[in-house]
Image 1 (cartoon, rainbow over the protein chains, first blue to last red):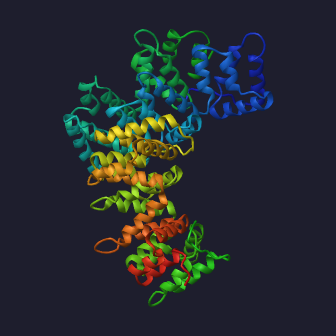
Image 2 (image 1 turned 90 degrees about the horizontal axis):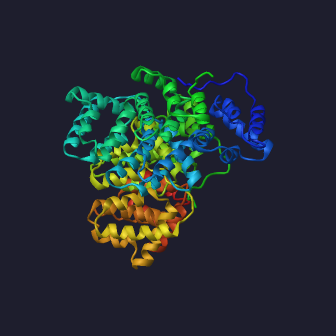
Image 3 (image 1 turned 135 degrees about the horizontal axis):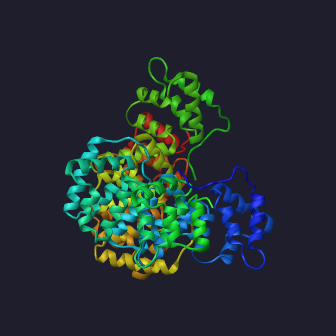
Length: 313
Length: 313
């Protein structure tokens, strides 16, 4: 379930006009912006952006970039782009970091549907005039590169059929590959099989070896490749649990909150399953996600995230 | 240019009825089938198949399978399927051979457009309930697997922009990788860069090292991986020249014609660029492709291929 709360009545023109009032003149009325955009879904935001451009001959996203600042601006920017375009930007930002944030890439491959991933790849090409695959390949190396490029390159089968014999055989293969450090064999299975098939394989693994594959791999957790594989396994097995963990790490990062990850999860999931992630967070951490977010953020950024989290004012 | 000659007037119902007459009763009138289907494009064939099914409550492709035989039946079958579905079948057949025919896979990645390749991957999943990538990965191994899975997995950027600096740098990278047998580096470049960028890189290579990359790699031509990379390079550089060579090899294969490759090239290119391939063949071999095909084939199979080649009766 989503957390985003949208109004029953909606007029893109009225919203565009209200936003114009908020950004015009001296100072910006951030509260007005949050009260509108924090309660509009992707289709509505697109209509607002179009209406704004038609009326004022100006791109709303550009205007926000010059009017807003800091984490709030970044969050609004990500929120205002078309979802596929936004994910292309997130992927590009992740790739360009000095240490690539491979979680963003793994999420695209292991949580998004094949069609959603394809839309992101199209948006990436339209925006950067490169393929996501080539930029990723050019900025990584070794086994990690092979894994990430394969993950993001593959157009996965999305059906629910499971081949029990194959699940058993590939559970053995994975175990053998783990023991022999045969990363190519692990990459082949994790990057090409359907999610349903992989879940069956991971279940087989646990039944047969009495340890989950993720835990089994953890003894080599220093290795970046292994960390990326474990991320993929977690994303495939239980996306909500995975996101809950990302939020928990972001909120409690030693040295300060990881706003990048915090914004990413809230912005990308608010219209999808953020309610379930919130519930899981509350259950596991004995504190509400709203309160945890409110504790480490401030100002307009805080108000915006809480609006997306569905917290009533 | 295509070789296929289609009539100005076309009625799917009249064609369906004529084909019904040809397949009904004792014996089959193969000539009638060839005279119709050998002169209909993909959209027309689809309409005929639909009309036939509506009128006779029977799938025409299934009917052909039981009425026709041998190479002729295989060629008609490939011709009657939707192009993406047919290519999915060709890929599946290529993968299932004891020694995989990687040319079929490389063609999909290096000659077909990214959208065409995507359509084949969708058709493959609809037909086999697996992804093309996973079947390919499960039946290959080592560096060849990495190359083929990467080639077919990637959604290439299709733009024409060329980065001259990158072409120069990657020509050096390829040369270094060739000397060091660093297949991963070669795979990364060939499978992720756009075709336009790769052509620029290969040109740089030739300018700088005074030998084409394909020729340079040839000293290791025993190696299956190297052969596949060279196939990819040829497909990217000049698809027509590549297909001309495939036809030449198929027609002159020691031990007998390679009908599989012969049918594949004629069926898949008749509506695209078979005229250019024919012209090139005639220029290079000093014999017309029609005559060369007529020399090694016979019966209905021969008549059908010649019809697709646009040879007037």
